[in-house]
Image 1 (cartoon, one colour):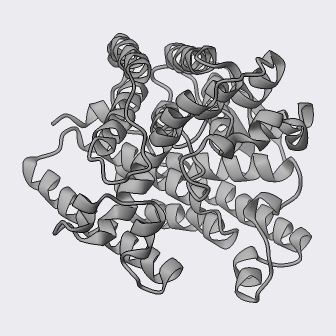
Image 2 (cartoon, one colour):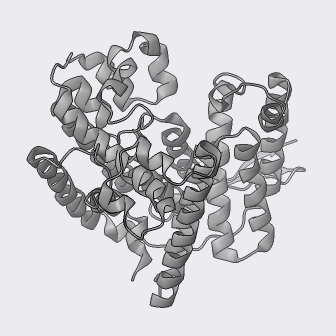
Image 3 (cartoon, one colour):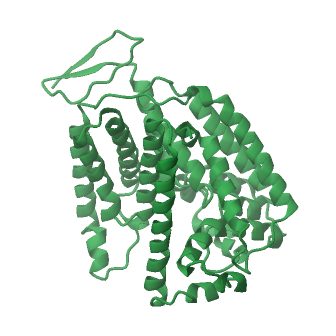
Length: 408
């Protein structure tokens, strides 16, 4: 199987939502509503459009090796120093404060605005550094990747860690070209072990090891409860399919829509660090009451389409989907094909496509804002910058022969 498929954002969208639909069809929970015709038609239509657009841009999706950057050490040092400043501003490192009993969340960490720029750049640069590693196999670069992943752990941002690792996985799959059957088998076995452990830890942490407590809480069917399938896998089923179940449930229970177009645009199409400054969370009625339409109070995510439907009915999901595919299409079409940042930008787009199954990643600035960096840097490649006396960075673009010199 060619791994180029996993580096196409439109195909990633079809794969993620298609997998969720498949898992949803297992019918292991009684609280899941039956799949309706309107939802099926909407999703199948979106799959057809995504497959068509995916084929249209597939000619640009080719893995290209890049050389290691001389600036990596300096940039990583600057990132580390920036986080030290933030830890000082925060009066402690979040993970250690958490172990000491402090009540905190990663959303409250850091210097306002500066942290958004720093953290999103760190995540992007991790993916870019990993692309350098897959190109050169220089183990020093792999060490840099591990260092760049540490801030996510130190500020207890599990979501950003998982998304960045997913982007790195996409770059890796892209780099190997194709997956042999033996690797697929190993991957499937590894996934089974991982999800078993995920469920086991979930039961241990939340229900003192009782494997049936979560099943009772979310009303697992008798057929599943009495089956020979290990109960630990039920956690995977719920996490993978409940966002889709919430969306389906919203289409059945959300019947009165406010049709507040301004708030819809603000909270569904703009990054959240901008949204909350235009329409504060406490003033967003639909956002505050979104859980009234979920299948269970503890299952809070509902895919990219959940809130748009609550806000505008079917107009919401349709507009969000059209905005998503238009943005992805023109981002790829206008991105310089031979830029060394193209693969990193592509991987981030794929992560957005995959995780749209869980939440609106367009609105989530921790991910969507990352796309600015590869795009801007690809434009700066037209200049060759040389720092005399302090050889830190060199940026090139073959169409221009100019040299810009700075004496330091």
